[in-house]
Image 1 (tube, rainbow, N blue to C red):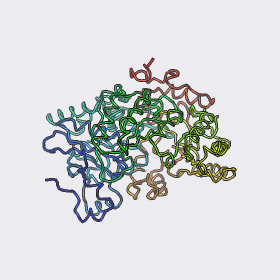
Image 2 (cartoon, rainbow, N blue to C red):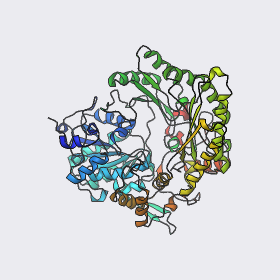
Image 3 (cartoon, rainbow, N blue to C red):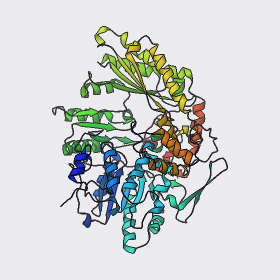
Image 4 (cartoon, rainbow, N blue to C red):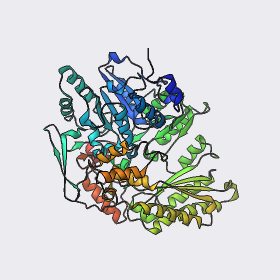
Length: 620
């Protein structure tokens, strides 16, 4: 009989108790005594966010297909339950069995976003297994981190036993088999970590040391053990059509952020935007077969009861069989009312508009463009591959097809950005609005709505812009207000609006994204001072973070506004993503010249990803 970890009194006292009881549709239930390995899969944010993450759904399905492994889920308790668990000394538990996490063999944490770093410490703290890796008992779970933020794992290095660099479908079976052998033969926790370090793609931070120069930059990265390899090589799944993908995703009891079936149609991107980390670290671009996607779409919709399906990728329009897949779904479900198809990351062309007009309510929906920059000069710098003519033409087609709501995504603080580039955001929005009002009356349906959203640029590891400086804090808001003031001076100002992100969050994200091991002590102190759910505006406390940096004699400007030379050794340089640093340097220099690099289908630019032996690199 399965007993809940929380009493009825506690469940009635917290917001959304369904976050903590498990037993959802398609949740896997096994006898914990019948398996050799228990794996707790964690997303360090609230249930509604974590349940929307495709990567965990894939690994959850993959691990549970093994008879000897039982994978369960755990998410960050919300603030109300966090307080109760601390006060009443209730250990963090997994949803399926409701057993404490400290009884598991592995705790796997996906690290998707820098602003979740204190939530990772919350998980380790509530699990009662030791926040620092060095403090863990012999029988504590092996704490392993994966996800995009592991491409600079150093700020979190002291808290993890292992980092998994790359795509999860590759070497976990090897790790599990190794662990089973280790349990049979005996040996210490350190012995197992030494053996794990021999598996390609696994980084065991305790087996390495870092030395620094007098100016605070990295001097060297030193292996402390003969098993500690350098570099750590990213793991990649080359055949995405014959690998793990769930037929029966877990269906949440409550509404979550992405309350739909998610169909990943491809991985990677051909575009080469110079600010985009995902576009670099997930190279090469690889597609799933049309037949596989048809089969999975039908199975997941049937097995979940969801009425929405989203075709997911970094650039959906670049999937070579998008039309065939989309029209298949439209035809397959044309007689089933309520099945909605979402196609994010589309270029606005005749095909896209035809599809969207058939799967969306035009009166309610808005179309989204991502010009990223307000002028053509700056779009060339970032290698966006999108002209003003493309944007205006796409908007015009949309207006003539019945839409009168458009969203634009921009970034402020990009390298080489000028005041003209900033004001260009307002001018571009005004030009699109004017395009609408110049159309014949038959195409106009009330006032047009042009909603611009501006985030602030953060230079990420393994991008051509990893050498870029960030702006000082006050400069971000200054630039956003300049755009906003320019919009207010436009003739069609009532049709234009601008929202922008929090600059203080941007500064912290920049520090954590480009930090080294010294930053870990500040993350710990920030958590101890009460920082948690930093990605949530109402809980983010910038001053506590600045106090934590000051306490540890860390200068935030060292990681944000400081100029970097092309010769500097970065904290993440020990990782081999396949994309060479030589290529990234070349792209940085090309950006400074304002030149565009062709996308991967137009021309191979020698980034290095061809070494993986497939994908777009081998199409021709």
